[in-house]
Amino acid sequence: MTNLADVGEMLKQVRSDAGLSQKDLAERAGVARTTLARMETLARGDMSVAVLVRLLEAAGYDLRVVKRGHARTLDDVLTEQKQSGA
Image 1 (cartoon, helix red, strand yellow):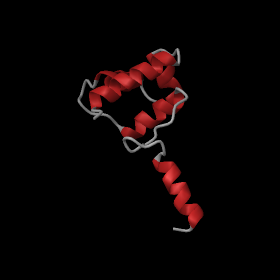
Image 2: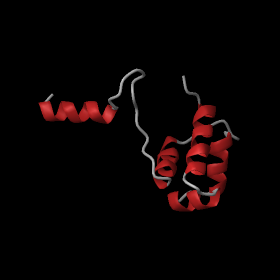
Image 3: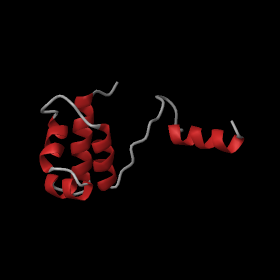
Image 4: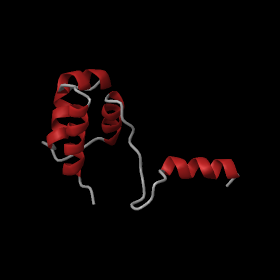
């Protein structure tokens, strides 16, 4: 299971893979660099999901919920339900 520390490390890796400094990514997402730094290191032991989504989007990523062992995302399931009239 992924915990917050893992998410912080993933965020740091996403930023690195996108070739962005903390300052650059924070500016793109409209958050303070210190907020990004805290989220990457969990300095305060918390993480804002809303800010996480903004940071991921600014780095060119989407946050998706996928059931373990399945390829379809929650978005896929909801789209299928809407199309079938469920």
